[in-house]
Image 1: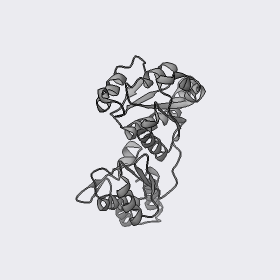
Image 2: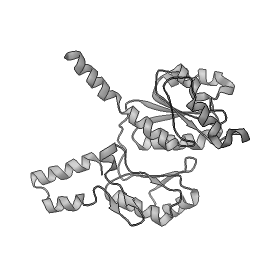
Image 3: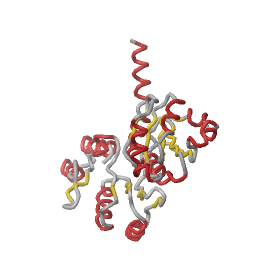
Image 4: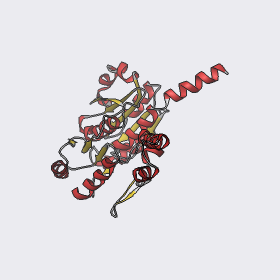
Length: 263
């Protein structure tokens, strides 16, 4: 449940437009709804500013659909991550308005327009085309959370001129998510060029000695560039959630600076 919906219910009780009993009925699923196989956290957006998201891997189509029903009944948009195409087809049959992003393995159902909440641009950068599935997950998630997000693809360190030719785009971003496999060097390079937060995402792409992304993960954790933060292997979703929170902070900081200047 969004803050705006809660305020509308409380104002309705205050003005007499709805009775207290009706208000209780509206609020009865806060903070969560017990579906036996899942506890749907309707309160998450009020606490964290970001809604409950469904992790599709390991769940059946029926389980995912019931969680989606519970969320949409409370007026929430729905994002399902790590969803394979077979399950997506099954959900499409049950809910025709869903949109499946195959490369990102994400499914979205919008009950209302997404409200822009981010201050600036979240730029998702990939070292190679093979990193696109993880980058696409980050891109879809960032947009779902109300951010302007763009993709800059295949600018890895093996051809550094490709990255340097897009330096103005990189500098225009408020937050940069850098997705790379192999040796995971790209976030250090990007972090050394910018005064913006850089979120590094190691991918499981690479030859044998990459150890399924462990080599990239360790390389990023040992980055010599200050300001680089690292998430888990292939975790485009987590990177986008962090980037979204950062992207909402600047207006508050500007207000605090203005207040300090006046005092």
